[in-house]
Length: 489
Ligand SMILES: NC(=O)C1=CN([C@@H]2O[C@H](COP(=O)(O)OP(=O)(O)OC[C@H]3O[C@@H](n4cnc5c(N)ncnc54)[C@H](O)[C@@H]3O)[C@@H](O)[C@H]2O)C=CC1
Ligand SMILES: O=C(O)/C=C/C=C(\O)C(=O)O
Image (cartoon, rainbow, N blue to C red; front, side):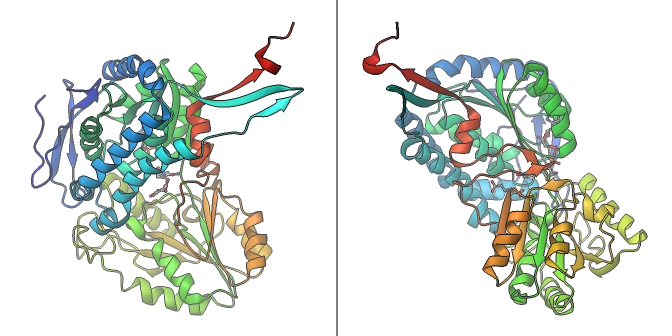
């Protein structure tokens, strides 16, 4: 298949990237922009044959890549980061056209984070990945992180290149080779990124991309017996299927899944800060797994909090995400838009009261959904317990710390939580009781890649970040050497 031109955007070859070459498929699918529904590109639609070719290429490239020194790999990772930075504007524009997130966020935060993913894991490999030797009756124990082989990476559409490279960077740093299957709603930056890896000098076959649909290319990849690790970010139902496929080959897997995080506002909170943090939960039009979408507010301050929140939220500017002044863009896809609206409709039919928004933005049309705030919701209502993944927050009240913790922990998820309080002891006490992979106190989305990242309960299995990433992507080995190197007789 010929490369498809992307109008007014960087030209991207949207065929697969296998063994350092562009490879097409007889089947293709059309990638449309959430901004206006226009086709952006025709994408190769891979299946079992393309996955097999990509895994074979990755297997062939593995021994030589695994044998490179840490220094060589770190240098290549930094070269990839240089390439990302050199093409930051192209990547930002492409990602905005493809997933509808703000160009402002892509320029300032998300694409710089792509480069940071590579620099961080390169430096961690050189400076931090070490375990002190220890002795057993004079014998020396030495721990090493051995590359595991081919890593299958499956990623979602809400922050496509940032979430993909959060996995690609440590997998490559560890000496593994990679097959990436990006989300079919946002295939473009993965294709452009393949060019960047080649320009940086990554050997053919070390990094491969197979485009395609989840139930075809994705399913074939996670079931492939040549795969040694599976790392997945996405939804819980998909994770169940992937875990079942991994079980058949006993392939180790890491799952970063959905959330329904609480944002708890205590009586002693700075209410302006609390309202600002609540408004932040509409970022990326609510399509953020970590979002604190359940506002739990002490009954004594709920009136004042609600007033400040509505005042701030009503000033959010919804519109074209390519405009740097815009605060909220569209939803990703008509199916997702309908899903979000379905949640809100059912909640309202069930008695929820709309404090803000409550439906599509009919002034703008298209996939723009109004920032929405619902109250009078029961603790077991669908809108309070299921992940909406849209700009929809709920407001509930509590009367005591014990009640706040019970409400906060009252879902099947455990990804993140936000606590707003001026009492440090309370913050520590409550944090200790919350089921969450990350707890933010008086802040939100402050990310340090040294920290473990992931979720509890149905928000995931395992943690990535810092050494935890290498623990997952490597076969850990302990070498025990007898005193003087002699073998025991
Ligand atoms: N914990 C975290 O860090 C994050 C979690 N998420 C979660 O991801 C979800 C949104 O992403 P979606 O793309 O809708 O999720 P999804 O589960 O539908 O798709 C994610 C990826 O899985 C692939 N896939 C689908 N079916 C598959 C199958 N049978 N076998 C293998 N791969 C398959 C898709 O093609 C896509 O690449 C939300 O639920 C959100 O919470 C999103 C971002 C971050
Ligand atoms: O910072 C991370 O590694 C993950 C962040 C997740 C999102 O950005 C998201 O779900 O939007």
